[in-house]
Image (tube, rainbow, N blue to C red):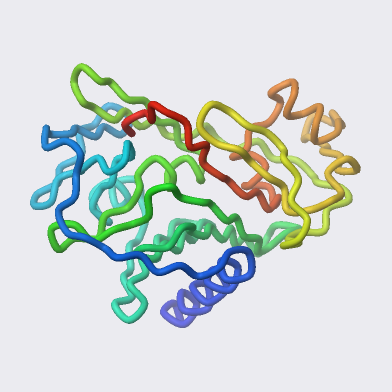
Length: 250
């Protein structure tokens, strides 16, 4: 039963990706890296061990083996060799990332939520790749899509990962979910733009557990909520990386 559920989740995520972006095939080259120096990865202060293939930087982005970091933070890792797709599962989060694809999907499936299943599509400027015979995933893009924070220490060549705070819970009014032809810019920072897959964001009101009620825009402007909070609570957010130079190496 568990295996069938994972298959269904993978199909849902694949459908989401096909709906919003064209399928693109990349030529994957083994062993590409723009710096051979060792990279250290820490999660909440703990150094992660990579016994065979080490993390590498490709085009300014750190790629790590499929296991290691993700199993350390509690994800179950499955691999579909027929589609070259990794499925990372933890609690309500189901991440589907395919070798060479320009996007990956995050399905938040919570049967106890008013929005029991919703998808988040994240664009990549560096896709997952096969390097040294190992599946290497873009670390920053995947972790930030589920609320983790990352910093780069250039002197020690260390990626510092901080676990997310407990997501804020609120009620969403007047929201109708994914619409591939209707994307509205919600927010942007120095690394990414975030779009809402609905034309009705001006009408979205958020009601918090303490009784506070405000518009989505006000909640973002006052930093009452984060993008990770929005995703957790059922909003279909699409993340697009900003192709700025120089790129931060994490």
